[in-house]
Amino acid sequence: MRLDYLDPIIESAKAVLSGYTGAPVERGSMQLREHASPSKEVGAVVGMAGEVEGRIMLEMSRDTAIGMAGAMNKEQFTELSPFALDTLMELTNVLVAKAVSELNDRGFTFRLTPPLIFVGDNIKCYGNLNIESLIIPLSTRIGQLDLNIALRMNAL
Amino acid sequence: MQARQNKQFKFLVVDDSEFARKALIKVLSTFGGTLAGEAVSGQEAVQKYKSLKPDIVFMDITMPGMEGIDALEMILRDDSTAKIVMVSSLGHHDLVKDALKKGAKHFITKPVQNAPMEDIIRFVLA
Image 1 (cartoon, chains in turn red, blue):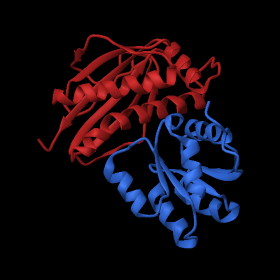
Image 2 (cartoon, chains in turn cyan, brown):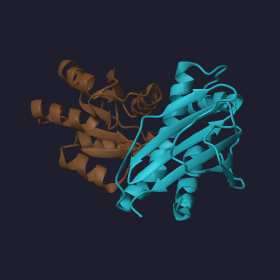
Image 3 (cartoon, rainbow over the protein chains, first blue to last red):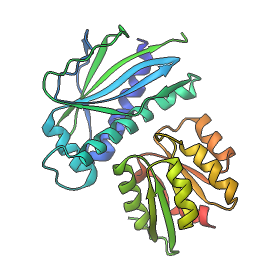
Image 4 (tube, rainbow over the protein chains, first blue to last red):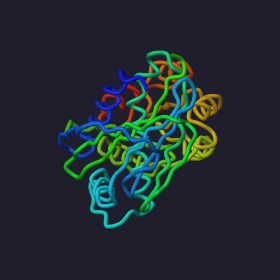
């Protein structure tokens, strides 16, 4: 993975989360993960295909997911209703799109998949991308969300 | 909050995300807008534009089925005076240029809460 794209992606993610939660977002220490599976109960993912391929996933606990959906709608949520899940998918869509728009402006052509969300314990994901995931914890006033990035620049 | 837009207008919101539609409706309602209708695809947007005749359309680009850019072209083919604002989470230059070249009156990147909506409405409806 080319690491020079990481900072713009992380900064975009922080800006979007900060905008929706109305509070600063702190970045934690980056970790490397060999497998594709999420480590938290809720994972919203957007895939990329083309000159840039891979995916960006936003992982969070169930409580954080409920809190984040509530904060974004300025109302109290008690469960992950279809509307709450739709809210989290849109959050991931906006966050990833803002993060990767810069890649488009640098001349890379690729398409984003519609967001997809997983909910459950011990979710296992398998793929043949063979890209390690970089995990960047982002602390918000709602709770911690992990940015899980596995991207490859094919044109380089 | 900024000063409210006084002119009344009817708007159509097109987005496959319920959250995105609600967020737009909330913002537009504070600037004198009245919801004419909602659509979740480009195809539905074309049909609802014909039946509802809104003053302004806010249309997402990436949707299942017919995408926003295709719906923009179809609506403008029937009504060249249609006022359509494209809304997208992607804000790269090529996409914005393409939308404007095809007849969109403006382009907003999500989250819509950050857009200077009052100025955009005034400009598009002028």
